Image 1 (cartoon, rainbow, N blue to C red):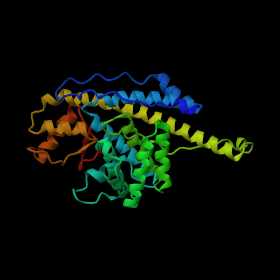
Image 2 (cartoon, rainbow, N blue to C red):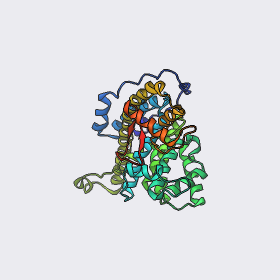
Image 3 (tube, rainbow, N blue to C red):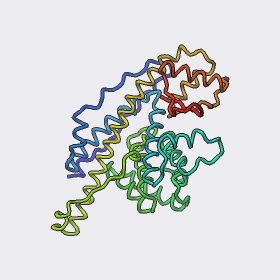
Image 4 (cartoon, rainbow, N blue to C red):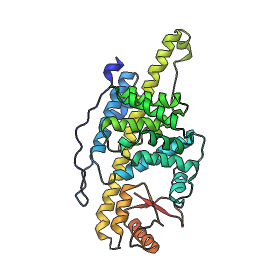
Amino acid sequence: MLRGMILRPRPPPFLHAQLLGSEPVAHAAPVPSWLRKAIEAAQTVEDAAIASGAALGALDAVVRRQERWAGAWRQRLALAAAATTAKQGGRVEDEAALRDAVLLTRPGDEVGPAGSLLLAWRRLAARPAEHLLTQAGIAVVLYEFGLARNDEAASDLADDLRQLSGGERVVEMLTGAFASAERHGFGRNLGSWLADAMLAQRLGWPHAVPLSGAQPASGGSAPRARQQTIGMAERRLEASTQKVQCLLVAQARAALRAIDLSAELGRRAERLLAVAPKLRARGSDAVVERLLCDDAVVASEKVAGMSDRGLRRLFDRLVDLDAVRELTGRPIFRIYGL
């Protein structure tokens, strides 16, 4: 039954990207309430597969609009994924601390283990999807995850993923990504990164959308009384089915969370674009584009033709116009974003 339920999307060609200065594209309708309820009410693998397919279809529509603020959206999702994987790895850094580790470190200096985790997820969101799963790309992300940078291991993992990508069913590809990472001793967190990269390649997205990393590790097992009445083979089959169901539900929840964030950032981006013509400072266009392309911008960012003082005054003006937010609450080392 499961093999017949899994969708095999074959995406149409991309729409042309929205040109700079054009009118913003209207936002898609909010996720219907029935889909949210279906995800939480899924009782079987078939239920979860249908809900997951519908959620990914809705997310695919968001990705294909190629909004001007899509870079900021993906990087905000990358920050959430990094915070979750840091916590699962026993680290204490939250989103704010991770953001500081990367943005407030001078170029060329080490960002530390937590900052490297964020760099790995930022790489997923920023690099073209087709370049993510090369041997060289995997070797770099192994290093950023704090794992042994072994060219042989990276090569073996890349070979595994190439074989998985040739499969017909999305769910088998995603579960295979997690299994391959664990088989090589790299754990679930890297599996999340690999699964997101493989999903983007399968759906034909130009960039991956960080999804799996922000989902807390979940699992489950059959009730104890039930386990005592079934044989080993049945128990293994039941555990495998439940694992697939958990993965599909987690994927669906992550897709809805990404869609909700896209709606929120879309409204904020429209406000920023509405006030942009009022900005007279030299270099303001570059600052606006940077805010649309990234999670956040530090107040000491180097912008051509703009002094540090001029940049701070521009950010103060944007905050007054309710076009951006100051994200730290600090009087110094301020960071701004949508």
